[in-house]
Length: 154
Image (cartoon, rainbow, N blue to C red):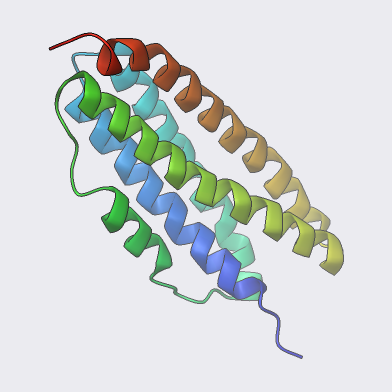
């Protein structure tokens, strides 16, 4: 019997690393927005920690090195953009990348239940909740940026 959990572990592991890099890049690029700079750096660190917490399970179940996360990152993220609209677009891209991690956590959680792996399930539950919080912050910050970026003439 082949266990396909390795595919999703690999996809999530790489997605988290891509998201960490993207959070850092957006934080640096939009340093004039103190909340964005500070929170993006915190969220990048959180993604790195999530990736680290996955490593024991990668060792246990293996991981298939899919290039899907890099393709998603390169499709969405060809560098940060300037100005209010640029910030909005960068946050939107981060949200889509975080959503990729979120659904991977959900699916890996289902597999952990099926495999009766309580240790993996505990890690999933903790990290999935933090990813949901990342998405909530991104959605809230996009709502805050949207009126200025989309309605006010530059």
